Length: 73
Image (cartoon, rainbow, N blue to C red; front, side):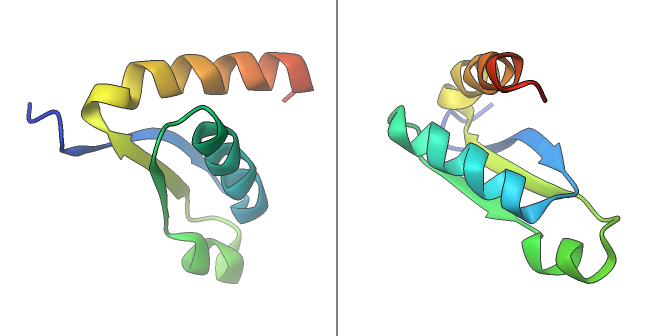
């Protein structure tokens, strides 16, 4: 896999939650993109995905897991 390729590290149906996660990743120096937030706002069913570069994906997943553990989600 190309280390520059985008990889999904998190999926949610809440656009606000996706933005919080993206901000947390950014504060850790991980560039990420939120994909699908407009569709999720319309239906509440479609997933909002957070993508990072492949080389950041494992670290991003660990940070998200730790963040959710500490914040009760």
